[in-house]
Length: 77
Image 1 (cartoon, rainbow, N blue to C red):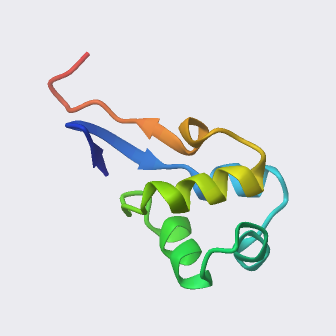
Image 2 (cartoon, helix red, strand yellow):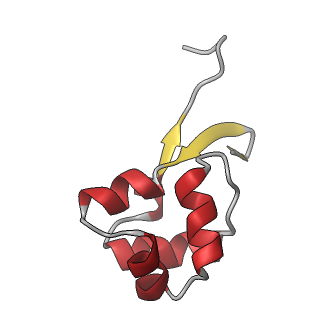
């Protein structure tokens, strides 16, 4: 996923699993469709809207930034 020219990957699955939360429970807690949660869970390059990320972060008790991992281009340091 590219945000402002910077490459990121989603860490929704890793964060949720570390808290013992699965797809269905996260969908309920965040009030986000299970289809959207499934997409974020299975595809780290999926591009959800900021409002969706905010709901997921709130449900997991983390910041939006905690759901993103910076992935530099091959030429970057």
